[in-house]
Length: 200
Length: 200
DNA sequence: CATGTTGCGCAACAGATGTTATGCGATGGG
DNA sequence: CCCATCGCATAACATCTGTTGCGCAACATG
Image 1: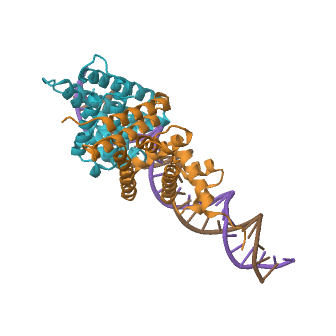
Image 2 (image 1 turned 30 degrees about the horizontal axis):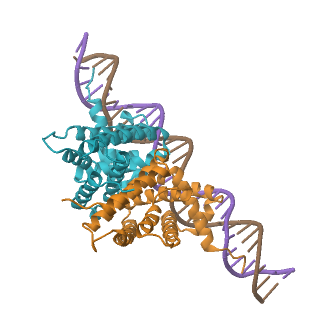
């Protein structure tokens, strides 16, 4: 047998190149040659590891989601208040550093791309539902007083929307949404969600 | 002089075709031929009214923004509470009917596209700032009690993010975010923003 | 009716893109 | 030392894309 190459690692490296290309050129600028250039190889190598462009995108998306999930799972479980635990998880959805900025950008493009690909939409649906479920548990644990707050689902959906919108705004105009502002808005939103009682 | 054609109207019709193509194929599927097919004409006509693809996109974007602004300006000014007035304006950013769904989809694509085009980013910045300013005035008028609420800017930013995220989620998966849910979340968010007092 | 101007359909062009096939070097087991 | 097999670079190919130019039909004006 001739030399053996770490198949999985090569695929991950190429996927990383896909992210970089998407981040600076968008999905419309994502071409096999651009990916090859970003990865420092030839298009032949890309096609050698991925049957076609669709498979390339699917793998890049899969690895991205895996990476985000791993980052959240790897959060240090300190002796914090339930509210701090909620904040720590929610914060992971915001582009607060270079790594998460890249993730947020690519994630935004992939999310919009689900509109034109039913298969992607299905995956997105599952992923999104899981995310909502996770935040729901954290919110329930962090809300004070009564065993079940009013309109828990609505509060979670408001938080999710706030996170997505904040990430989107920060992605399209990073200068106007520095990390400080993002954190402030998230803190405020948590205050409102956890303390406010619906009047109507 | 031979027959005269309403230049502006033709351009608007073509821009409408651009929206339809973007809505069902995304920006990557936006080609001159697809636009021509959607408009029921030839590519020659498209290029006759627009110098190049960039001009085509710019005009489509411009008309779209104008249309959204006009819709908000045309809102009936009834004798409502300040809170209802705020809700009426904020609701315009949500894809609650077919027309606004199309707008929200195209708007999402254009917003992401600003990342790769500095000129578009500048326009987006101005438009976004104007939107924040308008909502700020409405929130200030709707907040009860003190003349100036705590962290007014943060509350507005949270509202804006919630609206954007809600629209994005409804755009990517309309089935999971029916108009009822959108309205419920927006009502709740307004309750939280207008009534909640920050503790920290 | 003649005519010049306008509207725009049609087609050709160069460049880019996804995909496929060919071929060569390298490498580790026999 | 040999060579089978894997890794991948190169290039050819058909298709699609934006852009340009040609040319004809329609029509208001003289």
